[in-house]
Length: 210
Image 1 (cartoon, rainbow, N blue to C red):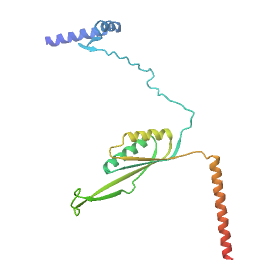
Image 2 (cartoon, one colour):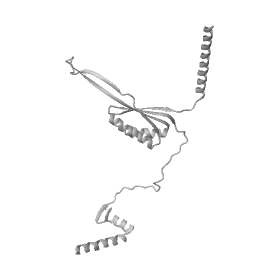
Image 3 (cartoon, rainbow, N blue to C red):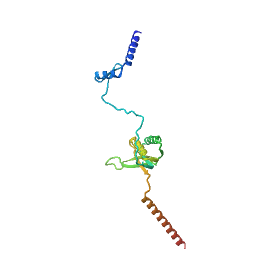
């Protein structure tokens, strides 16, 4: 009981002393002790590094540019590997990331490709003794539609950084662009040529009928 009472008295004194402990006395004691401070009966050394903490941590930085963003009609991501479990796991990860970004995504599985190699069992001799190696390549195709350039860059960087070992990726982008005057003239020329061909075919059929 006496020990418990003495501990309670010591705790009361420490708590009372900590209330009267000011910031100025803390700085003075820190300077006098050479960068050390006595806190809760333990010596703590302050670091010499100074970190500037911004005041507005909740406000994100937004950059505005006058350049129009690139638009993609379709983004095709072909992933291939040899392990089905790894491809299934990566497909789940890529679909989940696309849903978090609000991207419409479709997944289909192309047929697998099997390559067989027949080689000698020995390096130089025993031609009759051979061994056959088989290499199976599995595919997953992710189709993303109606993307902006910034969204496509963020998504591709995210899934490429988390690409597993032994898995390859091939990306095909279909970009939307403005129709220029040269394109209009080319389309107009193609349409006139098509009309002329149709007229020539009709005239040939009428002559053959007569």
